[in-house]
Image (cartoon, rainbow, N blue to C red; front, top):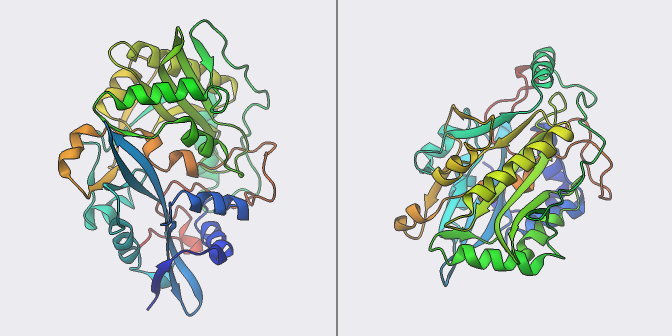
Length: 384
């Protein structure tokens, strides 16, 4: 019977072995150190038997604010259990949802095969009415068609090289009277003022401060910087958007994921739509096949629908949460992908990485899926 324990730095190699088996992206030692620092002392849990580590669930804790109150929320990532640890996902999720000091635990990125696991363990669809929704903007129809052909060709095996690289030309940063690229260091004052404005609105808000964004931008395993855009009105920001390029697998083209979209009321929604349109332009120039908003709430859906070409897709429930402290917080919390693991676990696109010693070669898959997407010939199956 496997034992459950907190993950340790000595587990880095074992975690890479698990991620390689699951076709999830591996990390360098520095990358794992960075990821597990995000756990704020609760970095995650492993299952271990006589043969070694056979299961893992990572944990990210983020700071939140509700007016003057300060809270902490936790989101899980990379739930992986080897066949010999079958049934162990229950123990990992029990430890995750039982961690102290959080107002909520969430899994915002499960696929159809994994979703029943979370429902069985007490998680409910979240956000209410939108837990099964994504919004997708196709950017390159012929590339999407080529992806479908490639996936059919490699249904039972993995390609030994990247089939889609995207553009090697970096699109120019936007310049204008209102719309501009932001830097978490040089634009820290404006970003912090924007974050304070969000907190004053009375909603439950995840920390978007310059310090929090600097931490995100410091991932040693990233191949290129995230895209942070802002809409300035005078000396203040009225809207901010964060995008990141990633790949689901070697046989799919890069995708531009909208990690965050936020704005100040009452007049920032139009500016937020303008930022999404700018991100679409960047994604098309960067060779992305599509732009995607993978976690939707009613407010972001209304803004996103004003950005031409978006399609709402409802398939399975992929957003799950347990409100630990006070269920009355539910209507005050409207998460975006920023609240989940999206900004931390996307598979980097191929390119010239600005990292040292990262492990992300052939065999790396998407770390944002909780089931094992491999072919039956490799013994891959949903996590138990």
